[in-house]
Image 1 (cartoon, rainbow, N blue to C red):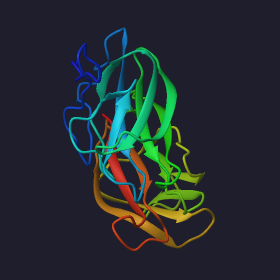
Image 2 (image 1 turned 135 degrees about the vertical axis):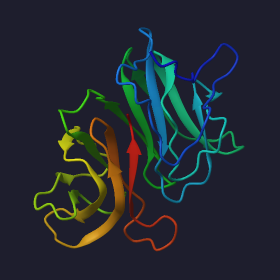
Image 3 (image 1 turned 30 degrees about the horizontal axis):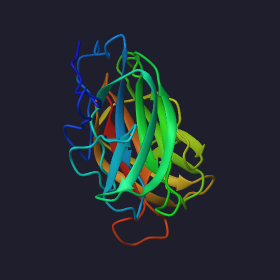
Length: 232
């Protein structure tokens, strides 16, 4: 069983490592302890500055939490917590929410939407092993201005997911692995590719989240993009 790093300890909370791509262990039997959940956090709010995540008022990130950053799964005692965010070195709370985390469950907590109205989007992550010779993927639409999106794979006629609205997450579904797949997103029912990520290695037996990041209207570092997280 994997010993996850912990969010909350008697004296302090912590996130040990900040990554742009986060991965769980390859051990398919990894689960939190019976009284724990496992949680990853992703900064998906375009235009927001570096943030501080707090759990029950205690700082939970030891490393920088910037746009596009994702943390590895960490263990947290199963319970209902008040999650909040502030700008780095600020005490003014931008958003807070009470969220329940259940034992033996995996969760992703996304900090979403634009800086003037940030929200938390919590997903329960089903890390059940994929079918034989398949990988599992899901799609999370975190682009505030792109509308409902379709996710496809270049060269595959049928979209993997269709009409995924902002802040929505699909269920995981099986796809054929490949060494250099290109994932592309389009506005629902349209044919123009508005963003893509190329040469993604998708391995059989693994589990991935594909997510839409940024703003369709932007041309700077917050512009629309497609990102991949390895969940397991």
